[in-house]
Length: 440
Image (cartoon, rainbow, N blue to C red; front, top):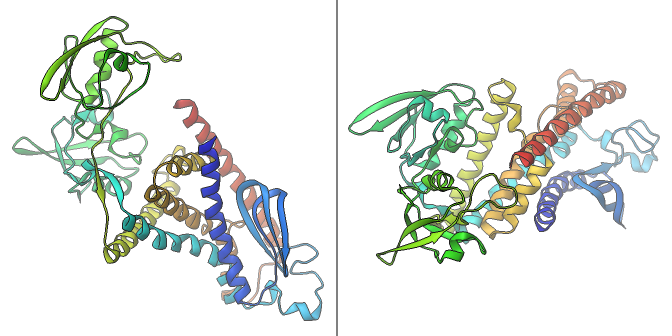
């Protein structure tokens, strides 16, 4: 429940920033703003200040700014307006002014990360230590696409489809640029160079782990679940697991197979603690209908805390914002080209989950997720779909070039088509969200 509430609040912040852009530029251009709403549907809170009614509505999946002389209705562009009010009508403003008002919302979403990511870097961020290390493979998941292609543990990635990669961080953008095509890995193996091709089913957009490649992860316990076999047997945070029964353990990824082989039988677990080897007997068990046997441990993830001075924080924030914008544009291009599966599209449930989980961590994570989601919202709204801001910009661009607007009737038909397309997209996104929830 906390996750959902936190997610809705973070989503509301992004909607507020978007609508504030429309509102502020409309006011600057002298347009009368009738309503400023966060959410749709029945009013929960409403207050009239000056010309504008400010509202919070029941469905927190968007918002809107309604202006005098906009669209249809009794105060729309074709309605009879008092001559004194006519100069404050949106429809009577110049084309550049109307375009500025419409573009202001998504532009605000794209500008927000430039402002908040430097704060995240200034406050300091916790990053997995391996991200700055060379992308050397610690484990290849048996039966995965990478395993079938012949990638081995110990291989170090030099290039991905011709793009140089020096760290694990570099692999993400390289994979996005390769989406929809076979991925060519140039690997340093022993004393030689190997080149292998992996043809992932879903584009590897979720990173190397989605094709079965994982960084090295030593079998050191980071946390123990209460009332589970490991905690009851006396294992502690920081213990390094050396073996489970007859199975020697070198990597954390070997634990699951060893535990499943033992099943629900008593087994000795050898750990290293303070340079001493200790043996504990425990019995793995199934929990809450889970088909796997569990002992109740999670790995210790080494992290690095980085804090940047002001100048470097601004530069790092700007660089990261530009990188996220570029990656989003590449993803959209690959999606429309059919190189990326539509199963990668996430809907409001996914957005709320991501935002809610970040909201329960630290300020840097919150700001980073806000920046990421703000970019998605900004670019989505610039797509030339009639009901979105990008569709309106298309209409005004047509009017600017051809010196005549689309008729109101034509725009209404186009917006109905756009609404249908948007609803179909929402249905697909909700379907993907539900499939992910069931799968997890």
